[in-house]
Amino acid sequence: MMMQYSNVTAVIWAGLDFPNFFTAGVTVEMLMRIGLTAIAGTILGIEREKHGRAAGLRTTLLVALAACIAMILSDDFYRNSFMKQASLGTWHPDPARLAAGVLSGMGFLGAGVIIRQSNHMIRGVTTAATLWFVTMIGLAFGAGAIGVGLIATAVSVFVLVMIPYLESLIKNDWYSDLGVCFRPSECSVHDLVNALESLKVKVKGVDCDEDLEADRCEVVLHLKFKRSSQIKFMDSITSAIRELPGVSRISVKG
Image (cartoon, rainbow, N blue to C red; front, top):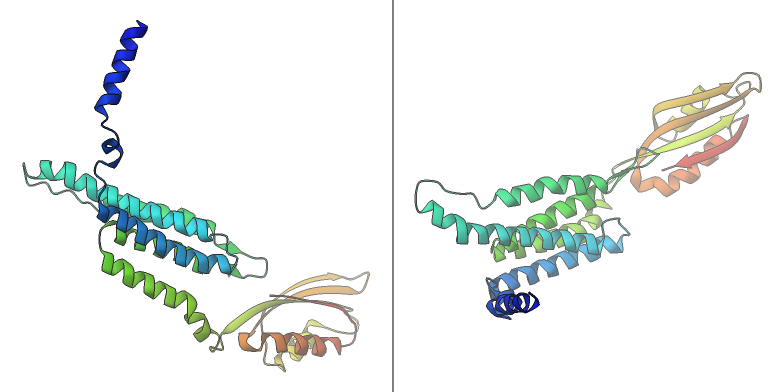
């Protein structure tokens, strides 16, 4: 019995035809697609890793390679299996169906890196978009569209590296939460709003918690102002609120 098992094993190993068994179906073009995808994923991953994002180098690289391999498999399945069946009739399979599944799955991974902070700020949207975009790059290289993949990589690097310099020149709106503790007998929310509006700061909403017995009130004002003056705003806002009577504590978030 042991002898028969050894003979069967020997026949199987002999039929595998090493090392051709591992390289069957692998072409230089496939390796080039995977290599270019790895380079693109590494470049974009380093950019995200440098900014300390949750989805950094490893995540971006794995996503890109997974998309590339999925597209290579889809294209290979189409060529080696489906083409033979398609020649027998009018049925034409779609090699992009696996790629569509990859893009759908990217929605879960992208949602996982988007974080909503306590001060109404949302982070991770750019990182999620980068993961989605690098998936498209991987699909392009995997499908053999080398030119499209190279152009997409160059465009994405330009957007992530150069556009922030342009964004810094735009005086866009910024939002912060201002917490103030004061005595209602000496100060009021109306006084706080007037002091802020004199600094061209808009109050979008107010949360109030008042203790009548202790003559103590805590409010959180949701503010809107220009981001370019954020640091200067911190000094101006604290100075203006500090001058109001009855104010005992100030806190700023955002």
